[in-house]
Amino acid sequence: MDVYRDAPEVTMGSTHSLVPNDRTLHGFFSRDFPPVLTIDPGDSVRLRTLDAWWSTGPYIGANVDERPRVSQYQEGFGHALIGPIEVRGARPGMVLEIRIDSVITDAWGTCAEPQSALNAHYGLSTPGTVHAWELDSASMTGRNQHGHTVALRPFLGVMGMPPAEPGLHPTFPPRWHGGNLDCKELVAGSTLYLPIPVDGALLSVGDGHAAQGDGEISGTAIECPMRQVDLRLDLHSDWALDGPVAHTPAGWLTLGLGDDLDTATRPALDAMFALIERHYKVPRSDAVMLASVAVDLRVTQIVNGVVGVHAVLPPGAIR
Image 1 (cartoon, rainbow, N blue to C red):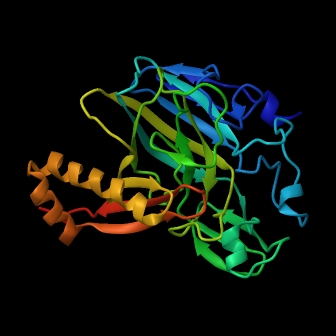
Image 2 (cartoon, helix red, strand yellow):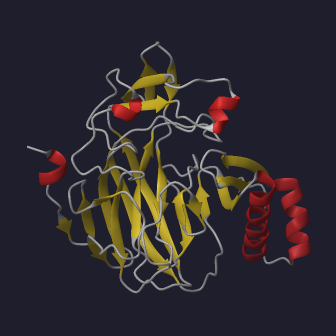
């Protein structure tokens, strides 16, 4: 039995369930993909996801690019995504709210050294180093084959919607409407807000990370399947956004994207100034001054071609 082909999908009132199978898995974003689930605003979805590489199980010693993959994988696919999920009433210009209620890892994950200009700069060679991790969601720790132990802070690297343009779009670059953001602060208890580019929203998610540092320095985190992810989706028509914003345990985050860190910093700060104006009812000049003493700038990731910066307003920083 192929569990990724035959596992059931269940709908229970306003809580729905999706699992990886022939119908739900895809390796691109596209507005042309029909939704596999249609829900009402305020409904919740429980998902199970594969790791980014579409793997059938833990790393067992082969080249990571040659590891066994599920039957749904095709050459040229990006991350293993599940969806798309249509939200009734979603329209371009509105904001999709994604409340992340739980993110629970499976029992294994992998951190590999992909071939890249950055890793060449670090002096690393290909085939590269691979760390195979055993994950314990009870103790929230991971242990690799060398005996190193790290704390787990699981999150989904990819949560996003397709561009408005037709056709297939790669999963690797982050976009203003989400995608491969790789922001390690989007843990359970966070809410991500994304501007909607297409009717129905058509949300897809995947790329589970058990732990990652800011920047995702080598190009991979602890890439892992997720045993359970609970998301609640809602809509906002009274909030104009130009890019991702999140409310997390670390505080309010505004995310900027660009070809380099300087370029990515500007939209992150513009969005933070607007957020401070909105929440504290102050003019932009005061918002800039408040941000200068209360907001931190951090590197989201540097490895996806389009790099990311997020501005952080910690809880209670402005009272």
